[in-house]
Amino acid sequence: MRSIEQLTEELLALPSASRALLADKLVESLEFDTDPTIQAAWVTEAIKRREQIRNGSVQPIPGEEALNQVRLLLEQ
Image (cartoon, rainbow, N blue to C red; front, side):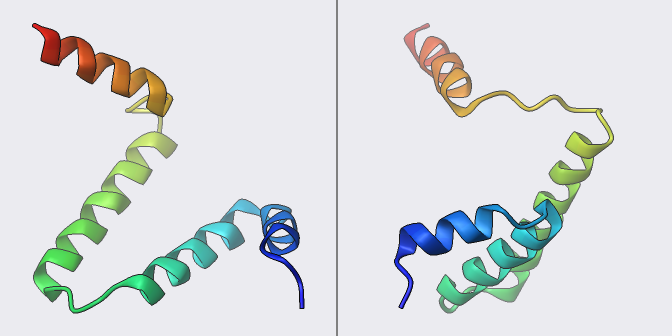
């Protein structure tokens, strides 16, 4: 049996579309009794944000930078 580290290395070598599909399936496997309306809203929002990044209308920033911006806002 392969270790998590071995699986991770293999899976990260997949093309990004395959990794995205796998990520979706993994997330689905963790979900519990979720209100379908709420789930649909989250999926719609995620797709919208992904498309904004892909078409360049939104520029992503690193998580640490986003957290720093939030901290600065909270200090005000």
